[in-house]
Length: 531
Image (cartoon, rainbow, N blue to C red; front, side, top):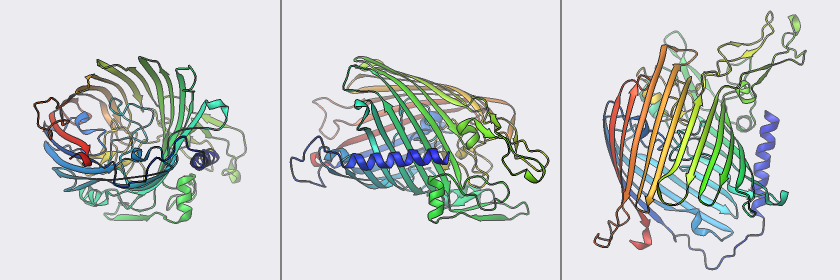
């Protein structure tokens, strides 16, 4: 795995550098104006619920949501998109997005604050910025399993090749994009309050992500088919973790933050604090294999895709070494013997697209299964029993860190029930073994009307460590419509205002009871220079 990740990362970095020094297709035509193209956004939202906020009125909103019965916010932001400098060798973008919420996990939220630069095709971003999901519909999908849009952005330094760059061989049929990023989590104060420092929590955890995507296809010839393949990986490392010591106190575990620790996050290696005989790689390492087959016609398009999540070697390669010796050689690899795990844990999806304005333009159907997790048995080889079985992967959880969450929300797919729902003050995922069916429908019958519907059925088993005594089920539904105000009789300041109404419901035990809610959002966007 280390060699594979190293080659992938080196390939992404080399491609970004090579892309930067290719001859540009377009030329600068005027002087550079760093204040030109500023866009503003003013938004107000309010929600009322019976019970908690329903799942799809809360999830996949970059963490800008609340489970409280009554909640809302006022939001304002200014952004200069990188696209303002399209056609230039160098581009500058920046943004500031501030939220004043009511009944949220914070009294004030800096949702986005970043500066980014582009040199031809490569970009460098510093700060917190909302990044979209790759290879999935961001409005209709249930969410990515690794790099999702369900939690608040992590402040980071991110080097990326954000758009597909055509490799200088294969006659235009191979394209590459990807990124490498390091950042720091910002939710330690929330963890202190939520756990009351009585259960596992961590301060100033470091974050690393990387991804590479390869596309096979050619837009320059008549071939509507394309194939995309990718690997997304994340590591949570460093910081200071606290966990109960069994005697009424809290054990403190300091993670490394030196150059070697950053390297071990980039190329999985090392060991966690306290590990001796049995050593895993340093930090909480997780990720997804992705694949997407596309057909893109003049009027219609469809895609088939898969997202294979993993927490360690066993679920990453479905293969584990099991050829250790016996007696004094119990730590020695003696035989070419491997254990093959079942191919069970997958997210599979189908997406259909109809391009002209219509009442129904998009259909997404997804099936997600996470019950297996390399099986129910975990056994490290010993002096007397040399067999190794690496099951009980415990997706999104970690024995040192609070798991793959930020501010209580899952950083991947929200069907892994987020710690924010827990009533016992623990920051952990208590339902990560489940099967689910999800459907998303959307349409835009005109330039001024668009809508979407999300529906999900889920069956949960809890976790291997804390299974439910019986299966839990849940159904979550949401309908949402957006109307853009227009017309000659309206005052200018009202034209272009989006009014969005959403209604959601949950039925079942996974989200701890039935929930009903309504949400109203009013948003105005535009160019500052036109105010």
